[in-house]
Amino acid sequence: MKLLIFGAGGFIGSNLAEHLIEQGEHEVVGLDVTADKLAGIEGPNFKFVKGNIADADLANKLVADCDVVVDLIAYANPSIYVEKPLDVVHLNFFENMKILEYCLSHQKRLVQYSTSEVYGKRTRDESYSDDHSDLVMGPVQKQRWIYASSKQLLERIIYAHGVQGDLDYSIIRPFNFVGPRFDYLVPAGSKGGPRVFSHFLSALLTGGPIQLVDGGDKHRCFTHIKDACEAFSAILENPAGHNEIFNVGNPDTNTTMRGLAKMMQSIYGELTGTHPDNELIDIDGEDFYGKGYEDMDRVPPDVTKLMALGWKPTRDLDTIFREAIQYYLDRPDLTAAIR
Ligand code: NAD
Ligand code: UGA
Image (tube, rainbow, N blue to C red; front, side, top):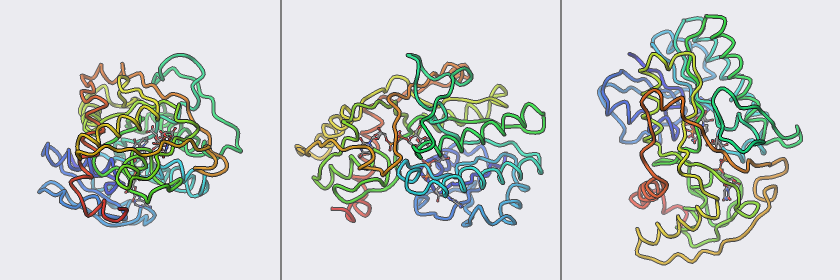
């Protein structure tokens, strides 16, 4: 098969490209505006095209020339949902709709990366089920939800095409993937910016404060990027992966952000032979991200449906963060900028 990855230069894209190159079973073409995270990721079955998805001629031509389109293009950091909500709708909905249109006109299978945020706020004491959970979001004034709204509508349109019978699709809902090449590091005490792993690691590298948003009592379940890439393959290759929606997450890694901060301090200490003593400070969510921020208390995935395809997550919480921290410790070129 010939796979086309839109957003191949990002965190998931670069790891997925690496995974597919190692497997060697498919031809892979990746498009992105940047190739920084693809440095050293190469193979006879991989070709990178530098370009913008807004270049309709290029995008359309690439879709016409592949078998499966993997769409990873989006703004995916909560700080951007609050700071630039219209940019989020423009990229995550309207530009993604064009990718859907190219797939429809060329009759190509679409693997669409959505988000666990499409479940909104958790209203019942149960895990999020791919096909059964209801949706409650915060008010319009809480702009954080513009990301989930954009992804929700995109999912609904893709699903409707599936029902209509003119689209072969799979929707993947990622639950906090972490691993090498995740986001970017920031100077001590920065607000907004990247996702939580990068903030906590930046604090460990600089000795700056670890900021716990709204007290650090929110929970997340983290997923090793390798488990996530294996999930992609299971969905791609299995006949039951067609025209279905899948949670991709690890239900056994639940932690509070305060617990995560302490665990990362301990792992970092072991890996560097130091005793990190960063101050843990509480910070209000709107102070950290900006007005319009709201948060999910818990995001627990039900992965029964995906496990029925033969997949199961095998990397625990310690392994997820140990390997992601080690990746950065091995790259002084990345850490030097903030030290
Ligand atoms: P990322 O920001 O690392 O990757 C997105 C990539 O898209 C970037 O490399 C960026 O340069 C590229 N891009 C953006 N605009 C572009 C344009 N106009 N033309 C070409 N390329 C463009 O994000 P990620 O973490 O790899 O997430 C990928 C997808 O998965 C997104 O759709 C995101 O919403 C979804 N997702 C990720 C996670 C996670 O745990 N990482 C969780 C939930 C959902
Ligand atoms: C993110 C993004 O919205 C999406 O990429 C994706 O849909 C979702 O993860 C997911 O993986 O499913 P979120 O989990 O809120 O959402 O992202 P983080 O920025 O990693 O925040 C996790 C938690 O850490 C939040 O409670 C946040 O407030 C907290 N946080 C963040 C801190 O306590 N301190 C920080 O320095 C940064």
